[in-house]
Image (cartoon, rainbow, N blue to C red; front, side, top):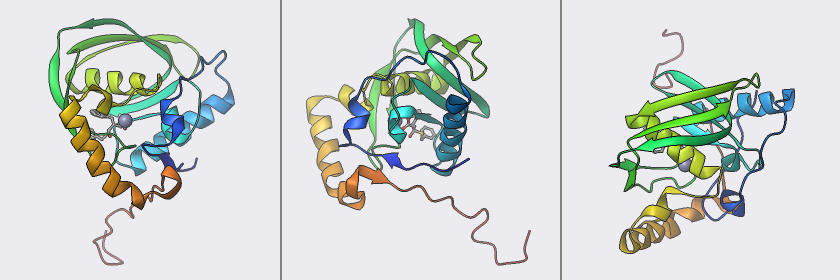
Length: 184
Ligand code: K2U
Ligand code: ZN
């Protein structure tokens, strides 16, 4: 298990189409495990393989405590539309309101290689769409209006200097860091 570096906006890895996973191997399961560890350390509720520089079509999520490892996920059904605020672990400190389907049904393989179907609304639906977009090189800022995207990218231009090489090092915050030694 290891915490991986997260690639940030500007890294071409975030714009690449991912490759279908032909067979769910131990290597894929190790990637899933590292992606969960990285996602939790970065305090995200989702993470897609391109965000850690990998080209496999794999994403992990933990929405309200429900954990998902989705391999080759596809949206089979999407209904309604709803606007909501999004951020992205690969575009720190940038947020924007975008429109998504309000309900989606996704088909994928799980980490055992079994076919599963995941349906969701609200935050789960939004996260599924956000992560599956990552697997096709799309980012939430692509959906902003011209003016809002210009403002978001201008803000990013000021922040990106903190991420040399388009890499965000994820540090695991010590649990209860504010407690002095000895306290539970
Ligand atoms: O893929 C990612 O970059 C993780 C995203 C996933 C996400 C974005 C927008 C809306 C839902 C999920 C986030 O940065 S995870 C951070 C977060 C935490 C709690 C609620 C929403 C977003
Ligand atoms: Zn994202």
